[in-house]
Image (cartoon, rainbow, N blue to C red; front, side, top):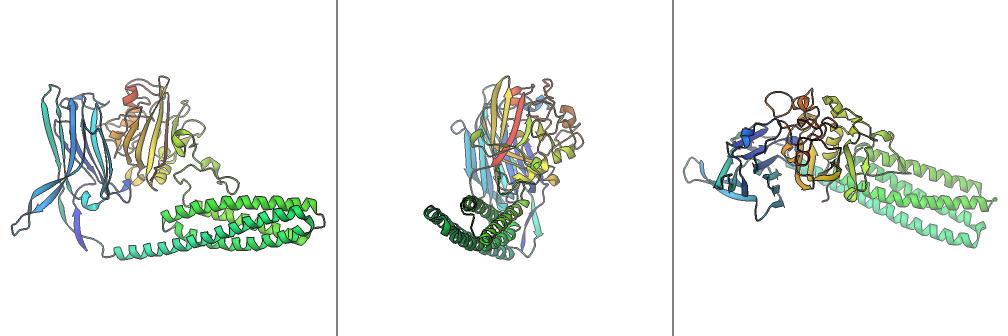
Length: 523
């Protein structure tokens, strides 16, 4: 097939000069396999400059923004023989203003988020369609300047396209793979149904054993032993079949794996309860009947041990591919992690729980002014101050949509910032951050860092033309030039924005506590 390819850089930035209006298109694969780019239209409403930025850049910003709108330009073919398109139609994508200060829309081609506040108004579009990623866009702002005059500003983003070849193979192989995965998932579901029926039958047998046990211990042991052995053999075969299907699905289809894992955990819980009841009854039989059939008892014990061992291997195998699954779970009794020190701490109480903590600053006993490798692998102690590690955070957020919560304490008061969309790219992208959809009480001091790469004292990826923001402000962060927030800055420092700052809350001062945590967003 022949298609249209973009001859643009991976990052395209166009700004309306001296009007405070910015229109940015970011094309970056690290954002997610289903996303081809992010479009941001932003306008400042105040005259305050961020640390390290030129104050002249905001002298002409709007005093009041009444409306911010973003359009997609749709070409209209002209009637000449050359086929050149000269006219365009504008398709409204989203708008925020005085009558609608916040917008959130989920479409097949894109997801749209927007907020109007006293100091900043912005629209962010999470582009899912390749056609939309190759389109031109127009951003328009209506408002008044500091002298009360009405103003209208418009910024256009144009992209140049040319012909290029693409691979001949494509839809056929994807369709075949999807069919195979669907068939495998259906077979796994059938096996799960069989196990559930066997468990139900086992529950009935246990109840029957309890009743018979109360009537006569002498004749009970033989019936119990034979019944348990029969049911365990059936369940054993079912588990081996599910084990094979789970192993196959692990490398092929993440969604099917997660569904299978959930069903397996549910069934394992029920099975563990039944096995416990059987074990208790067996022990009671041993104590009450010294003349019991030793051979039958040994056979039951051996089958229980074999069953437990196979369940452990099955659970461990299903977890090897994903040690950090994106949700906080506490696995007990059946299987434990080989290295418990690698299990990240969980917050199971805040806002419904299920949070994986990725950063904490509570007592200042860990130095956060570190190099690239330390931030890549993580450092500190889970009992105190720590950074989980960029590789781990990237691995967690690469599987599904995640949300971020930032808990802060400043001058004795607790505040928080919540972001409905959060992810971190891999090391190839320099751990580019994707963060949007703010709400909370601490003020939004992270959205301006959206789409930026991580910077440390030995790896300068910030937007500042001269110098390294990590060296200047003693931390590791997604610096602009240089920041609205710096939670990995110096501990207990309140000068020149060098501490653990959150600009909308602390200004140039530091918070006395910070904790960043993530979890999978609800569908």
